[in-house]
Length: 320
Image (cartoon, rainbow, N blue to C red; front, side, top):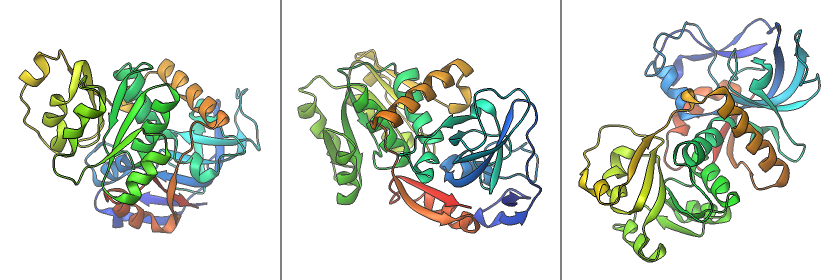
């Protein structure tokens, strides 16, 4: 089969399309023939050597994907050959024509959801769910601000929050992005390129402040976020590209909390609950992954350049 291989950490161009042996399932494992592989910012950090610098080389990038199961190993009881699934984490990497997974790294994919959409679930929806419900403990009736709501994680957060009964305020950087955020269920959307755009939050929250903020760029926004929280408010840091200085006094009077999150810390029990929620949301239509671009597998380097651009809406996927 064909797969992207990385023989040395470095820029996107270190990724090469090569022929490799087809994967064979062992006990408790399945093989999925992929129709789409999701491209995530974390893929670029790993490829650069910033994350997991001790990862054995060569390796095939990719965490997310979607396709059809073609083989199952001994002891697999809940998946079958021919079943449509999405992949969230895997053994062999999803930038490939086939991927080897443990049984429960695959999840049923409804017929109404395309393979491209299926490849847009794992990391984006996982990060959004963990931030909202496992870290911030958001509950119905609360108000959440989603920074960067037109991106993959942002769109997932808007949909998940609305489905759970939260009031959502999103931010985006263009008219197109703002329209997309409103279409996903946000009640209000602010242009983060407009000076003082967060000043409107007092009016939008009737002076009560925000209960939850999902922060995609903490090095830019975190200090200002604290000013707009209500009492007991929580900021969950999903992403940051540098250091930031904050005034702790902004948090003291509000008894606010700054919470970090990482999908790598999710427990097996938490993953079960997370994907049960995704399967239900995909089935009833409240979760609708948005794919902005589909590129051939050979264009993985171009996809890695594009995924870090702020103008990217929704998800970029590779098609083997």
